[in-house]
Length: 281
Image 1 (cartoon, rainbow, N blue to C red):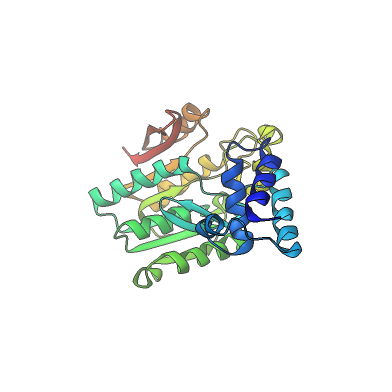
Image 2: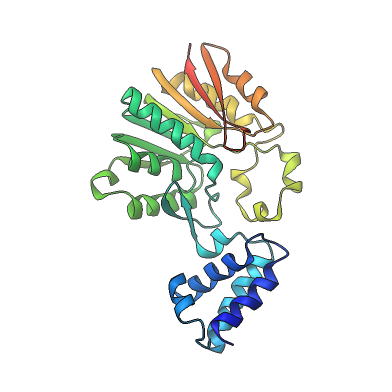
């Protein structure tokens, strides 16, 4: 079977689970053959070997089972950068880019120099902010050793050499965080899905690490602890940008509208609540 026929067969097989079956088939085949999409087009009549077809079709079967394309390719583009992703980290999503945009604007306006990112996962937030701005120091914290390893690989592959020593990685738990340093900016995309909702999530989310999704009973547990971290580790002139569950905006903001803190809500491109900015009053 040649490339053209193989792609057609794969797209037909995937049509029930994706709105982009042709594109996904092309991406997976290019990855499987270790070529770019241009070569698929220019050599569309090339016959695949049995080994090549079998390898590709196993990846297509993985996709059919619901496995996200990003985990198959082990890559995901985020804010113009190509991040390594595995099953040990959440897949960076376009919705989080509003947090990046707000943070960049804040860093540039206030000449912020230091950043703390809580629950860093792939490192997409601190690495992107270091890449795009003149931050001098970033600390990226995650409870997972595997996530820290992926974030370190991303920092090495994406950051210019002169910026790679500006980021440090630390194993730490948001629910038991101990740090005496204060920061100009604190960011986090913590687990915020209420535990009772996890069973009803789309199938692709079932492949992502549960610990990065499970916001405990009401989805707000991590925010309560982050509020305490901000009081200790955010500079009095600093700010925090936190991603939130779109249906828990009011409850999330209430946590930060007390004890000297105040919050402000921002919507994403779909006009859904997505990020809150927290500062001292």
